[in-house]
Amino acid sequence: MIPALFVFAYLAIVLYIGIFAFRRSRRAGAEDYFLAGRSLGPYVFLFSLFGTNMTAFSILGSSGHAFNNGVVTYGLMASCSALIIPLTIFLVGTRLWALGKKFGFMTPVQMFRDRWECSHIGTVIFTVQAALLVPYIIIGVMGGGTTLSAISGGRVPYWFGGALVALVVMCYVFFGGMRGTAWVNTFQTILFLCFGAIAVIVIGSGMGGFKNAVDALRSAPATAALLSRERISPLFFFSYSFIPLSSIAFPHIAIFCLTARKMEQFKRTVIFYPICILMLWLPCCFLGVVANRMTDAPQIQRKLEARRELAAQGSQLTPDERDSLREKMGADDVLLLLLDRYAPIWLAGLLGAGIMAAVMASDSQILALSTMFTEDIFAFYEGKARFGEAVQVYTGRIFVVAVTIVAYVIALKAPQSIFELAVQYAFSGYAALAPLLIAALFWKGSSKWGALAATVWTAFAVIAVAVFQASIPAPAPGPPVVAWSLGGIDILSRTPGGTAVLGFMPVAPMTLVSTALIVLVSLLTRKPAPQTIARYFPK
Amino acid sequence: MKRTLFAGIVLALFLLHQDIWFWKSSGPFLFGFLPIALSYHALYSIAAAVLMWALVKYAWPSHLDQYASESDPLDGNKSARGVNTPQIGGLRDKED
Image (cartoon, rainbow over all chains, first blue to last red; front, side, top):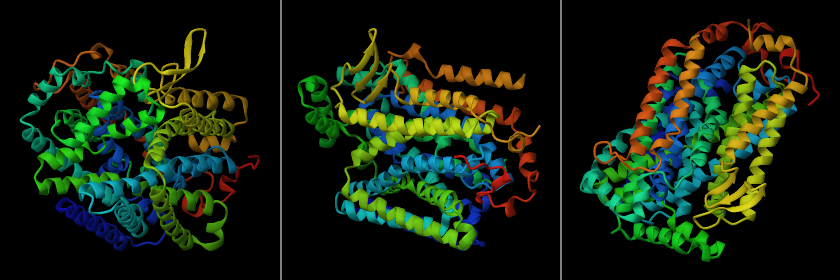
């Protein structure tokens, strides 16, 4: 229960930060509430942008993935992000910032509407963006409930943990807006980076040194493969390189790029982003792998048994039995188990608070959704002109409350696995929407019809993958179930982990087709007026 | 020339991410415990940071700063223009 008390103290601190940010805001305008008055300094910008990108998945999910899949997790998800995310911030983020400063944009859809001279197509883009963002918010609330319940040893029930986390996030977003969210994210990122390093040392020493743990993993046939990537195909590995493109296309990241006081603030973020990824992901992935050595813990033992059973008898089991084993293999709690076992109680408490910090990253998504709704819908359809800017901010705050309540109610009733899948689709969906931003900012010849084609394709592809995976159960580890082949080539397959198109993850063809559509349809349709293009591409 | 050089370096670093040469081996182990698949990609992350430093140092888009500070040629007053009005820029057609 003591670690849970640390988490409660942590929640009180972030609540105070949000309310303090509210007191610091001197103006009541929309730009101040939604974008912190475009005034964030270099370190707050770096840490809060990084913290915004690092969700529960980065900490709990990465160690859980590494537990079951081995060291490949870092190369799959972290190192390609270390190149592509700062590169997109450098290329796209700086341009978004400049356009926001020049034209007063507060959301990507505002920019699309102006750049491509469209109105309702912007609403279609808003709808698809919002639909892909909502599962994130729900899973954040679920993560809060689950983590608090796990840290307190079950004494804090799931419903109460979820409600408490939702209430705290809602309060500091409601009062503090972007300033409060950015400050809280900065605090959270520093907390986790500092105590994460301490945890690695403590756990390593508790295990009798990492060398011993790794030697033991190497010598056991069941775990030796976790130290290499032999079980993953290079095509699958390559497909993952498309996923980090989603980062800049996420509205909360694009909107965050508009909050910098000066373009100079981007410099440190671009340079240090890969180092922050290294500092966070490397320990999480490595600890996830070595957790396989903690065989004397009954929880770990159960996960290992489920993995062995699925590998040995998976093909003879029914889909439901396989799903049940996969659920037992679920390892998002291995980091908490390691802390519980090897860290002193005060450190486990502090790290529990750090993990809670990552779980609570849904704050940025809630605020982004509120900004998008008030700017792209309420204000665009004359609400701001009719009722004024103060009502717009008020509407944004009401929206924050409404979204949080709806997310909490859904989180209580729906199984978490549904939303975990939805978040997977969201990454692919946003990666496929990235060509919109790139075309708008770098290609004079792009048109609104091209943008519409790419957006509709993205929505279609996300739904198609979801339906495909729902209609064909995941097979046992081993060869995939081929759903469509042509001339001896497997076009579409159901794999144990999802879907493969010509051996690639769906994100690869989704993004490539989206790019092709925006190019082809733009070439065939009318461009914006030369005056508009001249404003975006001055000579 | 500088742009082409940096584009080439970025492409090269991207290709180096697909390190199929270490695919099936777990060793050598950095510091005796970090498998090659992890240590290679940890070093890769540091290389990405160095590349980002070089981009910031030698290819920083400083022209965007000036672009952002210039007034919008269309109306010269971004704060009063109101980006949400349907008549934005005076150029929007309503076909969509």
